[in-house]
Image (tube, rainbow, N blue to C red; front, side, top):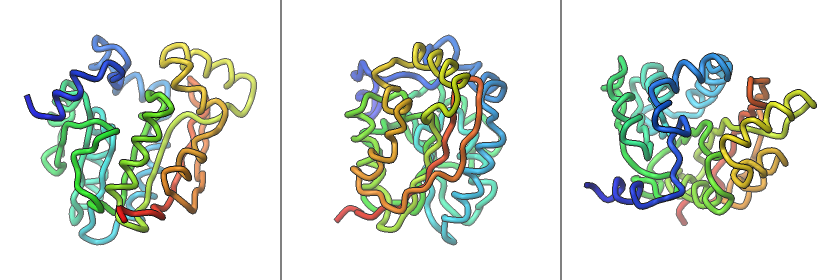
Length: 228
């Protein structure tokens, strides 16, 4: 067993992408139906593509079944695209997708990315941070800042503050599934505070979508710290 696999096995706080192992193979169709996936992934793809320089490196953290990483690699054959996830089973599904050979798949956790300092110009992560307790969100974002070059761009798609009563009720369902301690900061709209504390600036929300489980926000921020 490699080091990252051992860390995943030893981490009792790790939660698979679909929450429960038996739902892993249903992850893609459920996400498509409940989360308006094509729309928000398309928006994030356009933004990440624009921020990724010629011959650059893009990292998709918590890549899941690889939908976004494969799409970015197809859009940008000049670039290196790395997909990172802590779930070996879901990575196996990702490796089996059409176009997966264009992606460098790596097994690792958000709090300890298998990447060197200043390794990438763009790091994307979607529907990952709400699985983490507050201290682990901070650690994951610190890792994102470490592996991004100074001026590199972070793109995040995740739950935000519900912006009407119906979405607030819907988000209670998501919180019951994913845990209130992990999602409280999302309900309160505190993600920008986590970005800033990790050393990110120029924080902007460029998208907000209604979904079956609440408000999904799309964020972009610049790495103002770098590894130094």
